[in-house]
Each structure stands twice: as structure tokens, then as C-alpha cells.
Amino acid sequence: MTVDLVLKDGIVVVRDRETVLSVSIDRGKIEGIYKHGEEPESRKIIDSRGLYILPGLIDMHVHLRDLDQCEKEDYETGTMAAAAGGVTTVVDMPNSNPPVLSRKVLDRKIESASAKRYVNVGFYAGIPKSIPIFERSIVPNILGFKVYPHSPLTKGTEYTKKRIKDCLELAKENDLPLLFHPDSSKKDDIADDQEEFFSIHSCESEVSSLQAFLDAKVEYEARMHVCHVSCAATARLILKHRAEHTLTAEVTPHHMFLSGGDFAHDNGVAKMLPPLRSPYDSKMLSQALCQQCAIDCVASDHAPHKESEKLAPFLEAASGIPGLETTLPLMLTEVFEGRLMWVDYLRCCCSGPATILGISNKGILAEGYDADIVLVRKEEWQIKGAHFFSRAKITPFEGRRVLARPITTIVGGEIVYSNGRFVIGPGIAGRVPVRKG
Image 1 (tube, rainbow, N blue to C red):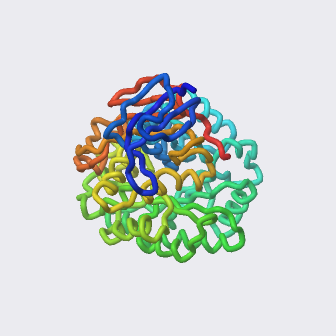
Image 2: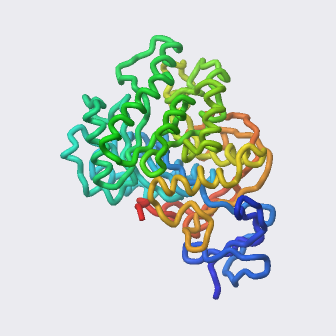
């Protein structure tokens, strides 16, 4: 038998131990994992000596903009950033312009992503103000619902207990997770100074929002997912109500590795929602992810903006930072410096998101799984936003030392990115939309 590709003599993690093995790929799938000298004949070989062969990251929380915000990011630049960062599957949030509240807008996104993609792209949908008008025909093409209680996608919507219950019921009926941004503030809460901004978007606000959803969840055992947990108190509340099948949560690298006191906040370089918290919160979030398993996965919350929007004075600046090209280096640095076990890295960056989303055959390096793979070199370097493929170049991680560099990214068996350049064009590798099953 002759296979399409063999990744020869790379470092593969088996039962939390690093082992030199070869991975063969055929027809978009992992055909097998072999000891040296036992590999099948192949049409192409990549010498992977000294490189880690790992599952590509699954980033279940990204904002790829496109449509009427292409000046910030589009599916081409966003998925190029993903591939360069070792991310092989992204799931795009619905708060685009226009928002995904109808079949028509979702179809526009699918069409655009299909032509421009470099990796797999999945989608979420918002929920219209009047739930009975929700177009159920879109369900096969989405991986979940996303709601924003602090900034609803439809004018005049309020996240009362009844509204939350109705959203949970819709999610349960369609066997999809309901993702929510935990924040109890109101859209018209305008801060007059920095102190008021942080007060409006406080940990108390985050906990209060989570509690409201937990109270509504009692009546509907729908699957609920808490986005970008930023506070130790929120993680404790999740742990108290821990239920892997019906309550899951994510954390971002910036909330684990950065603190609000690290920045002067003269501009928007480190402005995000939720905001950066205290060093104590950062430490507790890492523990919640690795030791307590209160948090299931890591997501970038990649949120690109124009340079002028980020360099504006803090209160005027846009919230959000790019993250697709920094997640893998940051997380693997934790592994290489001994703060994170391989088993936790693979769970929180690869298999965990796949399980939450219900996408089979992804997130695991094993025979029969999709050949979504990244080759990584252990190498010291510094993060430089100017080198990003994303249109968003401003990052609070500027100059940070990391120890892992993505070298080659393979999506569905196609070599997409290698040694700093793209070897195929857009619209070739990956699937759009990624579907359950």
C-alpha cells in the first residue's frame, strides 16, 4: 500500500510521554502511526526529526469579521493567521456585521469562507428577538448558539429569566450548546473613566450573569458553555455546578497569563471584554484548567480591530485582541517549562473543544481521525505583532518570550503552511461549514 504522506521520525506524545514515531496520512485521514522503519511506502515524506507532531488546535471562539467588516479581518487573513498559528479548525462568532440571525446571512458567510479559507471553518448563530421566527433550516450548518446578555444582537432584547429559559429550550430542542458571554452590564452603561469601566465589567458582574444562567438551567438540562471565564470566583461557581455534559467553560491565554496591572491602559492595546483581572485571578484560572478541570478548554477570542481603534485613548478604543497566532506558542511554553502536562494541553486545546462541539474525528492524533496536524519546533523566540498574518497587528503579548514555533500545518491531509509561507491557495484545504457528527 502507498499512502499520500508520511511525517517521518517526529516526536509524538503517547500516554503523556514523548516518543519518536512516524505518522502516515492517506485520503485526508491519519492512516497509522508507526515505529521507525515500519512506515508504509508514500508519495511524499516530510523529515520530522526534532519536530513535535501534534493535533492541530481547535479554536472554538473566534471573530473573523468578513462581510461588512473586511477592513478589520476577512476569512482569508483570519484563516491564514489560524494556519500560521497551528490552528486547523476555527468556529466563527455570530456578532458580525450583519449578525448571523438568518439563513441569508449564514449563507453569505459560508460562501465567503468557502472561497477564502485555509483551514476548517464552523459557525455559530445568534437567536432572534422573537424565537418562533428562528429559521431551523440553519441548524445542520451551525455548531451552537451564542448570546450576549450585555450587548444583544437584536435591539430591545433583554435577558430576563424567561428569555434565558427560552434560549436554553431552543438549544436543547436542537441538541446544540448555548454559549454565552457572562456580563450583567447593560448596553447603555457608558463609563466616564477607567475606574468606572472596570467597575461596570467587574467580576461581580461576571458571576451574577453566570448565576442567572445557572438558575434558568435548572428547568432545562440543555448544554451551556461559559465563554472566556476571567475571574477566580466564576471558576469556583462553575466547579460547584460541574457537569461535563451540560456545563462547560473556556479560558483565554490572555486571562491566564496577563494581569490588568501589567498595563498603563493609556490606549486599547490591552483592552478587552472581559477585562484583564488580578494576578490572583490569573493564577486561579490556570489551576481551574489544569488541576481542578473546572474549565474544559482554551480559546483565543481572536477579535481583530484596526490599528487606529486600538491606539485610541482607552475609553474610546475597541475591545479585543488577535490571538490565533499566539495561543499555541503560549500554551506549549507552559508545557516545555513544566507548568502544564501534555495530557492537559491536548485536552484543552484539541480534544476538549471537539467534544464540546460534537465534531467527531478531530482533535486527536490517532488512526482514522482527520489529518489536521501541526509540526512544532521547540525554539525560543519573541512574539512580534508585525509578523502576524492577521490584519490585526497589535498584541499585549508583544515581545513576550515563547518556546514553541509552528513549522508546518496540515489540514485534511493538505500541506497548507510550511516554514513561514503558504504552499497552497485559498479555498482548497479544510471544510466549510464544519458540521456535527
